Length: 432
Image (tube, rainbow, N blue to C red):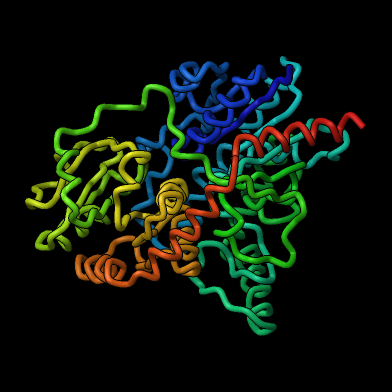
C-alpha cells in the first residue's frame, strides 16, 4: 500500500480536483492524507480521506476575500495579478511548509502530490531529487511554463511564430521575472529562507520543471507548442466535472423547459469570483433578454437574489450539474475558469470568455487561439459585446466544429489511469 500526501491551496478550484485524485487512489487501496485549509475538512472526510489542516496565513477562506486580498479593488491588470500572486500563493509559504514538514516528520510518506501553485513545497522541491521524496504536481490551471515560443502567461499578448516573435518572447519573459514580478520574487526569496529553503532559481510560481512529474489536467490539444517544454510534463487529460460527494442535487422545476429546441446559452462566473454578478452574469442576461433562446444561469452557490430581475427567457439556479447541462448547450459564457472551460469543451460547447484575474486571461487566450470561442479581452464586458459574441458563435458553425474536435480529443484521455501510471512509474524508478 502506498501512502500519498496531497497538498492543496485552500481554493475550491484547487481542492476539488485534488480530492478527486485522492478518491481514486484510495479506491485502489492507497492511504491518502490531504493537507489543505480547515474549510475543506468535511469534504475531505466525506471523500474517505484523512485530513490535516493548515494554520496561520495558509488557512484562509476564499469566500471571504477581505481576509487575504483586502486591497484587490485598488488594482487592475498586471498590478492585480501581482497582488493576487503575493497574497494568495507567496505569503502563505512559511505556514504551508511548516504544516507539510510536520507531516513528513510524523508519517511514512511514499509520494507527495501538490497542486500547481502550492509554492510552500519549494523547500522540498529544491532538494536533490535523488535525496528527497518523489513529488508530482497536478496542473489545475493552464500550463504556465516560460518558453521562447510563448509570451508570459496572463499578459494578453497574442501568440505569434517566427524568429522575431521568439526574440520578443525572450525579452517579455525576462521582464516578467525581473520587472513585473520583481517584488514577488524578493518576497518569495525572503519567505523561503525563513522556511528553511533557498531563494528560487527561476520564477517562484513557475515550478513545473522541478518535480518528478508535472501532470497537466488538460489535453495536449489545448496547449501551445513549445520546443523547450520540459520532459517531465505529461498531459493526462481533464477530470470529468469532478465534484465532492454530496454535491449532487435535484434538478430545478424548470429543467423540462429546455427541451423545446431553442438554443441554450449557459452563463456562469464559477465558484469563486461570483460575488458581483454585474461583471458577466448580468450583462449576459441583459444582452440576450429579447432573443428567442434560453439563458441558463448558475450563480455558483451565490444567492439567486443577487442577480436581480430576470427576463422571460432566463432560468437560474445556484448549482447545476454540468454532466447533464452542458450536452444541451449551444454556447457557454464564462469568466474563464480552467475547469469549467474544459468541461464545456469536453461537451463540444464553444465559449465566450470574459477573464480578468487569476489565470482566466490565459484561459481566454487559449480559447481564442484554438478557435473554440471568443475572448472578449475584458473581465467586465458590456451587454453589446456579449450579444455580438454569442450571436457570432450561434451563426458561425466553425466554432462548434472546432469545439467538437477538442471534445473528441478529450474523450481519448483516461486521466485517473494516467495519474496512477505516472505515480507508479516514478515510485518504480526510485526503487531501481
